[in-house]
Image (cartoon, rainbow, N blue to C red; front, side):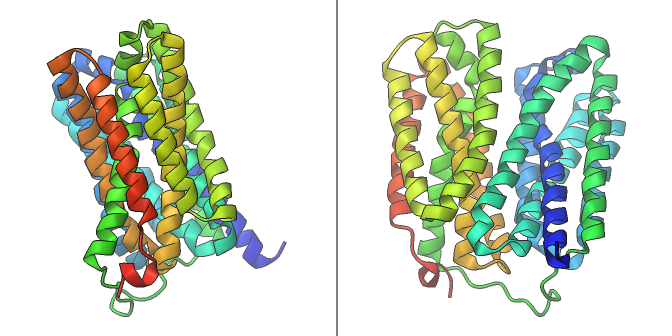
Length: 390
């Protein structure tokens, strides 16, 4: 194995470990009830902890390109290791504000930093021919981390109180991310392509970039809504709590595996055709979910929608990197990723509000189907590189 191959392998392996752990931020549903009991707040207030985390993740990815140019890989990942551990000091206060700051702010920012940097690092060391598979693996690892920790936290909570269980879980995260940071240090990867004043970002053309943004926002809307309301949707279809919990596990598993498969497909057939196929399939699944009854069918369709979501978010970073080039991909994806942040906050909230108005999920499911269809049309009309930047 050549030095270059060794560096690439070590970098990708380290990034997979890091994103796996940082994906655990999305295992919040396993902690929410215990947080409510500990802090004495109701569901609206406890949900704000996760909303804060989503905002922090989005901001970390948005501003990430600035950090990637100024600091080395191991330094950045050391920060990503330390922030969640510092957050324990705040969450152990047992207060709602402590969870907002420790989990939502510090852990959320670390999660976005680890995820965004891993995409950037792997883009830098991977050839265009294998870029889809590698970036898909990174995204899939992020999703599988959420799955594993959503199983681990309940096990810890049956043996320890909330503070101890969360501290143990975060300690495991710190150790694994630390190993990933050490691997990046050994690899000696260079992610600072130029000094900040020597590398000018391209100027995006508003119409072309807007299409890229809305294509992503509307495309992830359905998956984020389904994942955010998986338990109540399955229950309204006639399922019990155990079936709903099993559904969440299968949805997360499907989303994670889809990243690997979708990335490989993107390498073989390009990004646009798979993305269009995925959004159309998502729209069909949403319409069927709203129109047909039966808990078994509902569970199957929910798993399919989550799997499609996992494939979609795995391919989009590759699409952005191909359009803007690896030197500017972190800057560009940071802007596009705000679409995910917006959808992550609005999709579950809109679905909850519409359910309260009608007592049914049919309307939000149909709205999500319409948005998925619009996403397919927008992606079909996505411009080429010359029409996106000047």
